[in-house]
Every structure is written in structure tokens, then in C-alpha cells.
Amino acid sequence: MKGNTLRSKLHRRLAGWGTLLAIAALARSAQAAPQVIDLLFQGGTVVTVDAERRVIPDGAVAVDRGRIVGVGVNAELRARFTPRRVVDAHGTIVMPGLVNAHTHAPMVLLRGMADDLKLKEWLEGHIFPAEKAGVTAEFVSVGTRLAALEMLLSGTTTFADMYYFEEQVAEAAREAGLRCVAGETLIEFPAPDNASVAEALAYSERFLKHFEGDRLVTAAVAPHSVYLAGPETWRAVRSLADRFQAPILTHLSETREEQEQIHQRYGKTPTELLADLDVLRPGLAVAHGVWLSASDRATLKAKGVGVVHCPQSNMKLASGAAPVQAMLAEKLLLGLGTDGAASNNDLDMFEEMLTAALLAKHTTGDPTAAPAAAVLEMATLGGARALGLADRIGSIEVGKRADLIVVSLSAPRLHPLFDPVSHLVYAVKGADVRDVCVDGELVVRDRQVLRLDAARVVAAAERAKADLVRRLLPTRTQGR
Image (cartoon, rainbow, N blue to C red; front, side, top):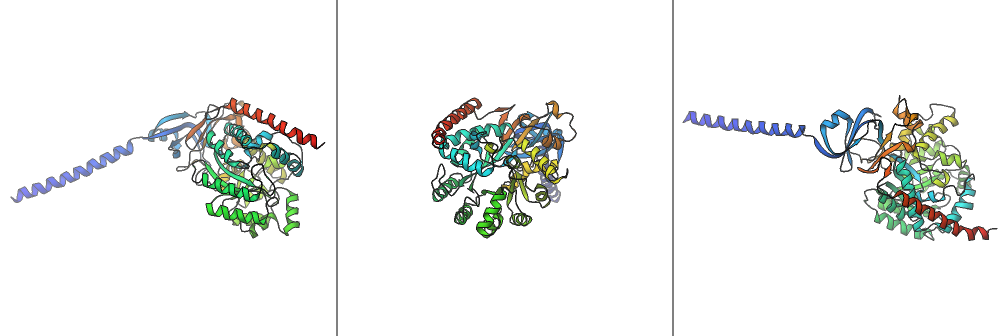
């Protein structure tokens, strides 16, 4: 009897061990089985722009459900994942999508209409009258689609926009598959869509509610500037943005004249005025910053404000050159933007990177002023930081949204390749972008935009231009 009891205990113990061994074997088997994923970019040189600034030759990026789930050596990721779709990236660079952190997308329809002018004359003598005469909801929809084509085909996956009829901007961006931070412009004279600041604030509140929690659109509030939006408007902006935890977009210290005007009016710099109004906070992104003083920059850094450098627009309007070397040294949240195509005259962020690097060197007399790696970061992770999106986009890291671009290296000017980061800033053009992925979806494949009909978009833009000319003719005739 005693022997039977011992045998029974032994059998139970062995059975328990067998169960444990079986579970362990199943666990090993599950670990060994490749994970099925949506998409694998394989074989390219992966420029991550992560904290270590890793560059991975023969690398790969795994994407599933819109997120990056693996980054590493191609052979390793091919063993770990079974993709439903593969993008062969051999002979290319795979990098984060570019972040155009300040633009006015619909203004592509005003491209080349008024050039070689100072900012005040350009704005008040040409742009504002054209907008009053011709900007409608349809104009904005058509212009944004045209801008989306241009941005996608040159590698931009996220843009920050300030304009009118901003709901049309957001809807067109979603249609194209672009990510955007969009803010309705608040300005203290009758705008094309809202006759008063009160109307614009009400529009902005509806806009914020409509796009709350949207996958691609981050709704913002966008007072034009401290010289075209007064303290009461700024207080209302702060209250509205705080209620929705929304970003704020504006222009700041773009020209010497702005600095002088605000000082005469308030006895402060524009930054000091905003500090007094208690609107400086993370999520505020200020464009230009050409005439920021050292004290201004220290304040913006302490408050976590993003600054967006727009070198080509600033050069074209002779507004000056932002102190980029100092901003980098001081570790401001520094992004890069094209501004609108009416003052640039394109939306190519690769051109903007090259200009940013060269302008900083030229103005300081120091060839180390803006190194390629720092400028590349400005155009990707820096822009994401400036807009408050760095937890989601801007670098190729596990857990982030899959906003990626594939840059072809087939052009003769891209050979030989010593340093991929150097090439991206100094040699690559927007036309070298082959594929674009936003939130895990391929929206450009082999330079074909997949969600827009390019021919129809361009034809609509030409019709919009003709309509604008007709609307402007009576105004110009009366002005003679």
C-alpha cells in the first residue's frame, strides 16, 4: 500500500513536470515563430534620428497597425517578422518623414504672384488684397490638395498650417493621407472667412471639437502675431487652447520693424509681451524668430516653446537670418519650415535643410555653425518637438507612428556615398523621394501619389488661378 502511494505521488510529480516542460516548449515555439506584420521596409540604409543617431546599413523597419514595431539589421528583422507586404529598400535611405513645422498650404495658389518685395509691402499691397478678393472655401480646398501633392512628393509627412477656412485644409490633408497640425488664423481685420475675431474664435472652437482625437489632424489655435492680434485676442486664445489642450501657432519676431513696433506700443519685445500675457507654454510654436534677443531665447526655452526656422522665406523677404547657431547651442526646441509658397516659392524641405545649413555658416563665418546632423534633426524630430508631437513622430523608433520616407540613391549626384546624413542635407533633392508612408499607410509608391489624382488636382489649381485673376481685375482697375 505504501509503495502504491509513493508511485502515485511520483506519477503526479512527473505529470506536473511534463506539463511544465510542455508549456515551456510551447513558449519557445511561440517566441521562435515570426510575428505577422503589415509592412517591412528591408535592405535600405536606415537613418533613425533617434537619441543615438543610429545609421544602420542594410537595415529594416517593421510596421504593424500604423506603428513601428522593429528597427534593426535586415537579416534579424526578416527572421523576427513575416510581413504581408515588403518594400524593397536596397539602394535607398529609409528615414523619418519630414516635418514642415510652419507653412500656409493654400498659398501655393499665390505662388509667384508678388515677388521681390519687402514684407510689409508684400503683405499689405498684394497678399491681403488677393486673399480678400479670391480666398474661398473652394480656393483653400484646391490649394491644399496642390500643396499636398508637392509635399508628399518631396518627403513631407507632417505639416503645420495657419490659414483661413482651416477645416478645408484639414479635410484635404486627411484625403491625401498627410498628418497636419492645423490652426484657423485669428487676425484683427475682416478675414475671408470670418469678419471679426469673435467669429474666428467661435469657428476655432467648432474646429477644435470636430477634430478632437483625430488620427491625422491635430487642431490648433493660430493668432497671426502680436502686431495683428492684440492682448485681448491673445487672452481669449490662451483660454480656448487651455480648454482643449490644443497647440498654438503664431509668427514671432520675424522682422526688425515688428520688434520696433511692439516696443513702441508696449515697451517690450514681442516675447516679453507674450510672457506678460501668460501664453508661453509647451505646445506653442512660433515661426521665424529672426530677431529674438538672448533674453527672449532664454525665456522661450524655459517655457518649453517651439521655434520654427524658415530660412528661405526670411532670405527672400530680406527679414534677416535667425540666430540658428545660438539656438542649437542653447538647445531650444528648434524645427524647420518652408513658410507659404507665396514667399518661398516651394514646399521642398530638402531645399530648406540645405539653405538652413548654408545660411547659418555664411552669417556666422563658422562652417561648424549648423552641422548636417543637427539640421536633419531640425527637419524631423526637432519639428516634432516644436509642435508637441515628439512622442509620436520625428524619428524611427519602436512605438512611434510609422511616418517614413524612402529616398532613392540612383541619381549620379548621390554617388559615391560616404555619409548618408551629409547626403540628405547637402545633396538629396525632394525629387529623389521614392516612397512615402504615413501612419503605416503607403501614400506614395514609386513617385505615384496614391490617394490623389494628380492631373485633376493640377487642373483645378489652374482654374482657381484663372478665377483669382478675374476677381482681382476690378480691384486693380479701381486702383489706377
